[in-house]
Image (cartoon, rainbow, N blue to C red; front, side, top):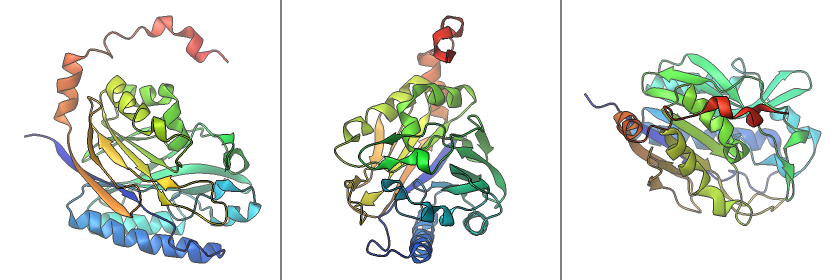
Amino acid sequence: MPRVTRAAIIQAANALPDSDDLGAIKEAMIEKHITLIEQAAEKGANVCCLQEIFYGPYFCAEQDIRWYEIAEQIPDGPTVKLMQKLAKKHKMVMVVPIYEVDMTGVYYNTAAVIDENGNYLGKYRKHHIPHCQPGFWEKFYFKPGNGGYPVFDTTYGKIGVYICYDRHFPEGARMLGLNGAEILFNPSATVAGLSEYLWKLEQPAHAVANQYFVGAINRVGTESPWNIGKFYGQSYFCNPRGQIMVEGSRDDDEVVIADLDLDMIREVRDTWQFFRDRRPESYDKLTEI
């Protein structure tokens, strides 16, 4: 029997673009995503991944400690608990990126992974943290991830997560491949004029180099008061040959669906023997500090 996973990725704009009420924004974004998750379930999705820190705007456009208030513990915080209930209700594996507080004063950009029975499987913490213009002041908010590159073995495939800026670093994408990932999700927040020219280059390249599926997610719209640029959406899936299978719009809230034939991974790897032909003994420079 073919192993086909119906996967969903969700892109969405800020539900309250003119509000400065952090609690109201968070609540409105969660409510918006509940509806979008239901749409994914109605379309038969087995797996669903949300965008980077899905319940807020991209607040890293400013440096202000008030945003620490929206961080939650994983898995004991209310948002992950809610998503566990939704995953169980819809019988759907969920990848849920939120702002994590580990201990007082220590925060991470993290994605929780939940199975279709609502069980918490673990988390991935973003490794590579940018701090650059215009308005990507992430080192103010996030400690670099310290949990390695885990792969989560689910009923619907082996899932890895790489978050936004991580995608510029092929080393972690290779680690996820070596750890057995069949589907890599990259929830992001990226604007036109900065990295758009890379959006459809880097992640298909990861898919080719590591011969797995990639689901790339980007939010949409502009976010006041910062207006660092337009989040251009275009969330997509690509296959292990690097071919884009389906793509979302530039402007709209959207559930992007693709059927991933996981047997294709073996077919491609049997053709292109990249893992067999690696020469790790010659890569010493890669791990020099």
